[in-house]
Image 1 (tube, rainbow, N blue to C red):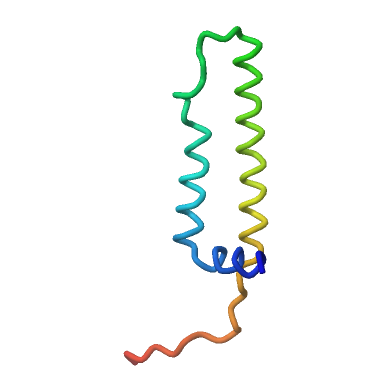
Image 2: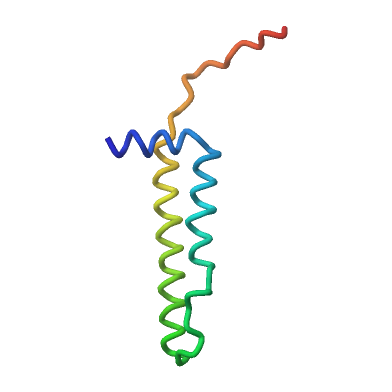
Length: 80
């Protein structure tokens, strides 16, 4: 069942891009980061966010691999 849902997301490029944009934007939001932390703690937060972005990109690539392949024939142009 989850694969069918992910397949439908992969088959809809507009939805897939919207999901990428919304989810990845959360990692760029620095409002919740306490800038009064020491450099080591800030570095740990930065590293965790970068790792999260990397893993999300991997997950989105896996979803894109579920995309249906074309059936091998093109639709006939009715205007001709």
